[in-house]
Length: 461
Image 1 (cartoon, rainbow, N blue to C red):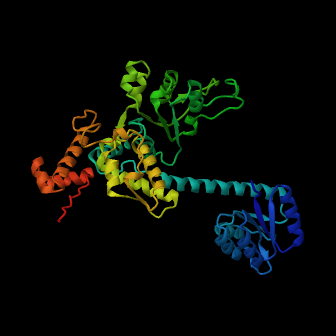
Image 2 (cartoon, rainbow, N blue to C red):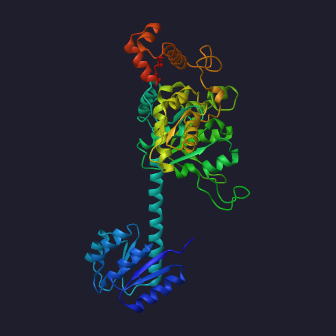
Image 3 (cartoon, rainbow, N blue to C red):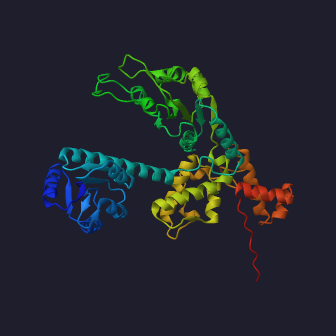
């Protein structure tokens, strides 16, 4: 890791020398300037991490210099030194963006401590900015689509915001359970507090207990220090436990106590700790079946299922696939630094025919691969590499045929309408007559289901 670089601006060479030697002995790299003009030029050339600035300079003062330095290096903390400190001057400097205001002669140890804290604050601000930027890039609307299934989910989720009780999210792997949990937190009264998440799948009882409840020093072999658990970290906020159906039964019992009494104990501790958290749990398992097999506690199920939100799998809402794919491609293009990535109509049709056992997560993976294979920014069917190609809905035979009982009613309706429209060479009026529905109704279904209509071309010799 490179050394932090500090620009020292003072017109007295002896003061600069003393401060420079001290800071260099503490691991800093120091640049020097003796005037406002030199400070601007040096800042332009080197972009320092922090600036130590004397108030009085030969060609101006610190307050007049601050805007120029901030324009060049907006996130660099600026510390002002002066031999003539007043409360009014300090207030003005802080209002203009100075990080600290110290009087001369300055204690070098104090200057070093303030520099350390200022740079740490700077790093934290950058982490927050990066985190917010990442969330903005990666966030996907929890209710993306216009189909009836996703609209019903949106309405139920809105009603869940009126309670502080636990929420149970059910849905297949990759359907967006984490995205929905994040939406619930961000739109709740706890939005400004912590949101912590933990996937319970694959964790041993000991590790899951340690992560949730924390532990005291010496609680078990290897516990050389005390550890804060996620429940404490989320105090007044939200805890999201993904795949709660995989949690060990002994952990389930402790979790039930937290929900009922808002108390728990760290591993190895003898005193109870109070915690105020809202629980959002999620699973792809059938918890009723796990209860019958004595793998999930009945009392915990009733405690966490105050509100149950079921996310429909992507295969049950093919009409939403084009919109979801478009939004995902916008984020993929941003990450790949592409101007834009589009889907050819034939590719859209292929995406809608596929059953998506991995749901939105699988769709994202397929689109990312296709984007890398596409050279002109247009994704075509040849670029789509499905994980389970045998699960593509077919209009004639094989998986996905009309008699396939694994399909939903929505799947069958869409496949049948597509087949009739194909047989009528894209003539909607004739297809509507065969289907026994008004032409306007058929148009509505075509639009809602995202069915592509292409008319057969006649060839004249």
